[in-house]
Length: 547
Image 1 (spheres, rainbow, N blue to C red):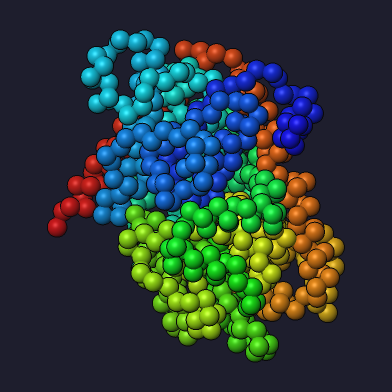
Image 2: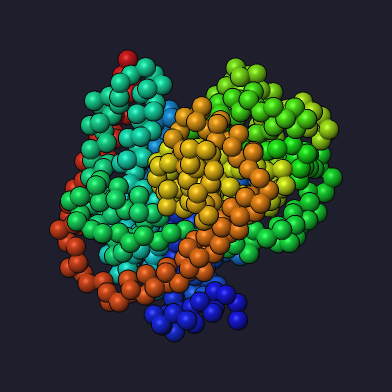
């Protein structure tokens, strides 16, 4: 019996009934939200439940391995809607794409329940899914738009996993863009445009039978943002399988990756870069987005490089993360980081293991040249085994986790599972995962259970912290490594998440069959808000086209 089975066997709240669960996620790319969905689906599947994932986009060259290798059953629902119009209207179009997905799924379930309802030549034009057996439960995350429709039309209970209220995410991004344009804040038109969208999010979220969040930080923000709902979400920490981060397991996965790569020179160069252990290395792993504040890592590294006196050991910084050429924010962020490197006189190199068509170079420098000539490396959308190899490398000093008020942050857990100290901002979810060293006035560690450092997002403070991490004695690093691994096992393991998630599923089903009169007031108000939202969207499109 494996650990997950044992954990479930020991849980007194784990009934024998096995469930059929449908996951709804907008885009199965590479990111923390996608990692949560993949891990949640895998954990329930390993517990014996039948799981299927429905999404509007799935790029096999830009996704997590279980969604590509057949471990999970993934259905891509056809959609001709763009992600944006003139780099605007992202949310209305995301809602429209999810509604398209949901309506196609509802039709495929209807065709299963009532075969012959439509001529066989007609239904492929209406849905890209085959007739589908109904589900016992739905798990929806990121967007709440489809919750009322799935719940009422299919009479099926719904769990909603709120990574963070979109109204707050949207406001944060809008503020960043306004500041970048030299403005004090978002325009009045933008605020008006968001009113129906925010009300729509609130109304549809309230339809969920159970609401889960990823941290205490997100729970407090949820209650603050949706105070009218008067609902208390349950914290379900994302978990990781710590066994996947052992040197033996990572080496095995890396060998498989190298065999698949064949003689590709770019892939060989990226692999060697991650395996190399000749230079003290700081690692940042995050999507290339402005809100991730990766510039903090570059600024702090530049200062630390100037201060570090061990000339025989030249420091290096590796910035790895998801990069999607469809996302303007990804393109702009990478360009700004490259420009920052040039300003700070840091020689940099951009590499991508999968080498998409849009990304040079066609050939890579030798390992010797990379070791000698470059300070900063950008690794775009690298496979998990490469990133884990990098974290396990003897050269890796620490993970730099730069986002401010990150909702949770799965990457610090992955670093801790590898025994790597984490330097993170002292805000958001990382405050709940990373245990600070608690240095005294003499710079001595006072917390024996520490797993890293929590510091204000300031380049001078971070550069000083990086120097302190470089100067840790070997025994202290071993203590931190052991504490980090133990913390992941005890509090943030995939086994614990599996049991807690399964319990939430059964508790949701205990509400019984969805009654036809359930939430009629909300249903009516939701449709009303949807109509207002679409009218506002059309008005904004019209106004944007006026000279």
